[in-house]
Length: 479
Image (cartoon, rainbow, N blue to C red; front, side, top):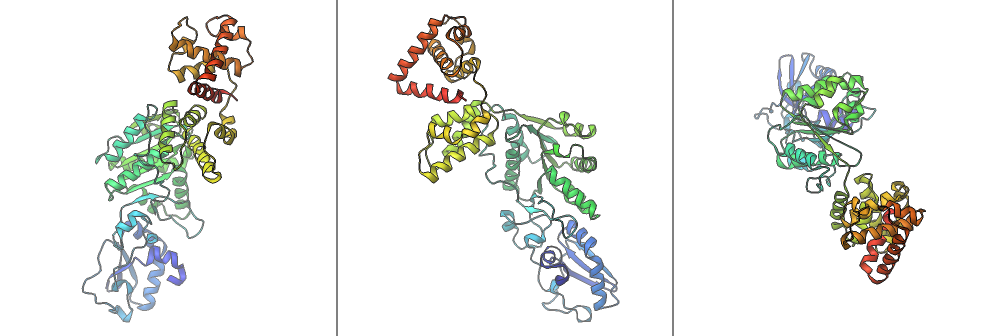
């Protein structure tokens, strides 16, 4: 059969077969898992029967069973009925990565060794190929980023609930909430947390069987199973796991058949008290094109929102990344990036990576000037027209005062100096006249604005640290 089906299919499905017994008209073969049994029965049983019958016309039935060891008394090289030599009876079959429908390469593979019993599953479904037919085997640890762990996740107020819930789901020996539903915008950390759950479970309890995949790949796998009439194997594959994690579930919105199958898979796993983790870009009740009964079930457990990042969280993320870089990154640059790139963490990390790559390849140190030059396209995309209100807000955040202090009559230095900085920047970065600027600062006279501008220019010339602060604010605000 190797020459008929090819080496890859042979290693995956036929090499693991072990001859157990020949009784009368029946041949009994064993495979490690039920999924493999169903696959061989569906795709190769008829050919196996024909080949056995060609060896002995009396053999009319081939039975595939699971988990049965080969008889220990079988001597190496012992012939079977009518002299048919059984390689399967000679040795315990080596289960290669391709041979495991629930496993593949990676660290778990090395733990499983060559045992005929499949190792723990930490899986991601590869995109279906258009050849060979049927459901594809799972690939161990493919698609899981080793950087995405709990230890590498920076926690702040916008994501602290989601982080705590993910950690609880990964560490608990029971199911604390089912499902755990994580939602938020692009690049805020949903996928990072899902990968972290998988890695933590893998480390804490390697025997737990985990499948992680996107909703898109779940749909492709389901369509493939329908096409090749292999839905039994599909159900077996997804309903026999300990933890099922589906990323970007909004993708199946409007896909009625896929939603129907996912609904039944969801119910089957909940009935067996198996953990389900889901992520999406919206809360369950805001998912358009999703059946009401499915939206209701997605909201059964704990729904954790990941809010847009705050300045403090963005700066913390950059600091954590910068500590792992081999070249120094000035703190002012990190502050600049945290202020300017507010869309999502993915763009923030991409900007830092670009700066580090340029400094490494070209040999120029990272500075505010080089950052603005290198990231002009990204900064422009995040820029908007500067207003006096925006200047007041940024300056108040930088000096840790209230925006209301920009309009108040308070004259303490802790308030007056930031207000003067804001007036100076308003003069530099907007086309407003001095009287207009004064009115925006609590109805002050234009001479007050003139005094503020003069005072800040004087301080910049005498205090290098103060000059850097003002320059940082200007670079963050200018378009």
